[in-house]
Image 1: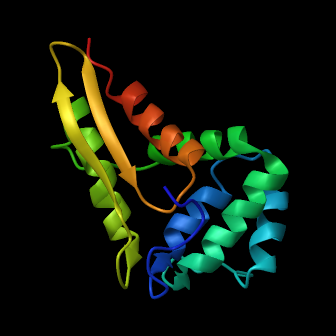
Image 2: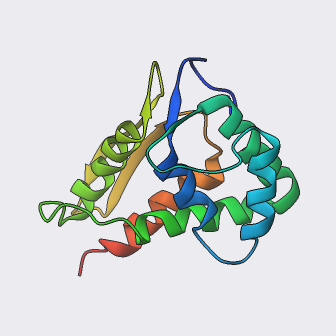
Length: 153
């Protein structure tokens, strides 16, 4: 997987998604705001669309300066703050919903996918392919949060 490199230079990211990452946790928020300013995202408007490669460049700097664990924790915080539709009430549906949310917050070309390729509730096993330009620590955080939120009894 090519991390931090947009699959398509025309892809845009919704400002809401950027806001969610910047404000995911209080610790390091000012540092994250300073980093995104360097890449042309000075004031984040939740209704505006931003160049994905600039956003990925900012995330790469966050990774290099704040660490992979920070991106994991940010990824983990995002699903915890998202209101999901009532029909998303099982782990399998929740895992599939990651791709839906991903596509709702990106536009303009090939953005990639979060794809559940195998789900077996009896064996308590799932395989998910994260085919996108975001770092694995970030993806792992999002998936971990969904696993925790929808953990079967």
